[in-house]
Each structure stands twice: as structure tokens, then as C-alpha cells.
Image 1 (cartoon, rainbow, N blue to C red):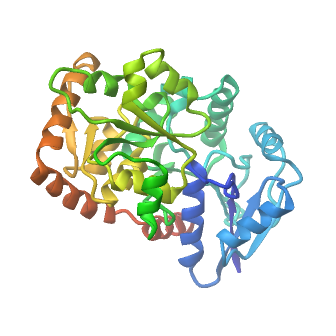
Image 2: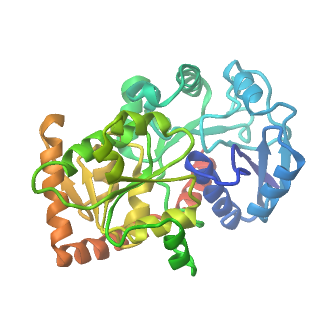
Image 3: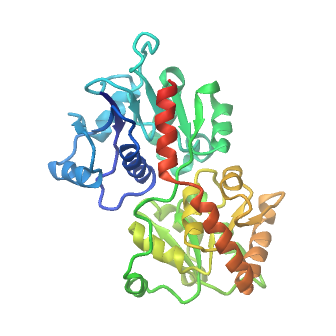
Length: 378
């Protein structure tokens, strides 16, 4: 019996987002697609006992859940310096950079293999979205992955190229896209949720959770241009979004009235916000937000996006592309695209249909099968 040991980080939180949500959806599908003679085991930092029960409930079919004696902060520090390993034997899969990376001989011990996932290069391209300690940790773990990981999973070829510009991983990089999460769907009580969130009848939504890579100041500049769409902008935030929101809005009372902030939303609530939007905007300034774009498209919401490489790769011809030769021209181009879509119901319907078709091409089952195959190839 071969046990694939998956590092689970943050998956017991009341509202799971980002990388932790990726880990949950991938692990569910790894369990569902496990080849004969293989099982999936979890490994988690030390947590309250009630959190272990939450993980077991969210991941039925997990063969076993091993628990570290170290909490998340301690484990991250230990693994940054090469201390502490996982119990048991078998390949290790980390859906993030939180992974035990150390020197090992895979030729002598074929089952001793470690694969990590690098979702973006923000520690280099957008260090402002992380704390100084976070930047140092991410850079250190990428260097450890370069030394010791048997393979590195990235979500797009664009991220692979960015990573290769930092450190050459050669043929160890494997592109395995993610998909829309299982929990992301419009529930039966969508009308009640929309009422509770006081959503306008017509609005533009920023796909994904706000941070400085979202390009909110540029979006607001576009909406304020003459001829821009006269619609409010709904922005979804979490506890870490305050700085990005303050930078974008500041003391501008007009902007405060234009932006409708909805904080701490569940996946179902986010689906209601995106599904009812007249138009959605993909984050403007980063290549790592492809899941946010897929979420909007999966609901048939027409999407406006920039020519960032990862977005082009993921969206294809299924959104309205805003291509500009300089960031200074982006507000004008964005305003034109938004106005065109808001004023053209037929164009919105057409983009909604092709967007849904495109989003269906990305599934967690496919990601899990490719992950199992990667471990088998090693």
C-alpha cells in the first residue's frame, strides 16, 4: 500500500480561501481518484482538537491524519531550515510551499519523493502583498525547493516562465491548473443572501478577494472617466485587505460611495456576488489570480481582463481583453471595455456562454489525475 502524504495547511478555518481552498479541493479529488493500492493521508500543523474533526469532516476518505507537535508558525520556521520530517513513508505532496524539503536519494528510495506547489512569484513581483517576514520565508522556501524538490507544480505556463527567470528548475516544473472549487456555487437561498448583502440590481464586481495586485485604483480611475459606466463597484475583502482598500479610496468621499465593500464572505456568498454582477473584472496587475477569473466565468458572468500572460492563457478568447501598451493608458481602455459590455446585452450573453464553456474545461478531477501521474512518473 502506497500512502500519498498531503500537507494540509489552513483547511480547518471557518472560511477557507486562497491556497487552503486549493488544498481542500485537490485533496478531495486525490482521494476520489486514488489508483488501486494507493491511499491519501494528511499531515497538519498542531491544531485544537476540534479542528482535526473539521478536517476529517471536510475530507471524507482520508486514510489517516497525522498531526505535528509544532503549530503552523513553528513548523514553517522548522521547515525553512530543514528540520522536522513527516511520519511514515511514501511520497509527499505539498499544495503550497509549506513542505519538508531536505536532501534525499530518490534513486535508492523511489518512494521518498517530494513535490511542492508554487502558486505565484509575488515574493519577487509584488512583495508589498506580504509581510517582510513572509517575503523572506517564501524566497527561502523557493530556494529550498530548487535544491531538494523532485518536482514543482505551478498553475500556468506564465508562472512557470516567471519562476524560471528567478531560478532554473528545468524539467522539474509541471503545469497543473486548478479549477473552480466544490464549495463555490449559487445556493438555493441566493435571493436571501443577495438581500442580506444589500446587493444593487446592477453592478460591476471585482473577481477575487482584494489586495494591492487587484488594481483597484486603476479600476476606479476608469469608472470616473467621462462616458464610463455609471454602476457601483462591489469589492470582496478579507481581514488582510484594509491597506489595499485604503490606498485605493483614501479620503475621497465619491469613491467611498461608489465602492460597496463586502467582507469575509463564504464561497456561496462570493458566488452570489459574482453570479449577479452585470460584468466582472479580473484582477489587473498579477498573473496568479486565474481561479478568480474562472469563478466568474463558471457562473456565466461576462469578464473583462488585461493581457497578463496567465489570464490570457487561462481565459483564452472567453473574456473581453483590454490590451494596452502602457499602464497609463489602462484606465481609458478599461472604461471603454466596461461601457461597451454594460450597454450591450447581446455581447454579455455571448461572453457568458463561452466563458462557462471555458471554465468547464478546468476540473479538480483532471488536476488530481495529473498529480497522481506526476508522482508515478517520478
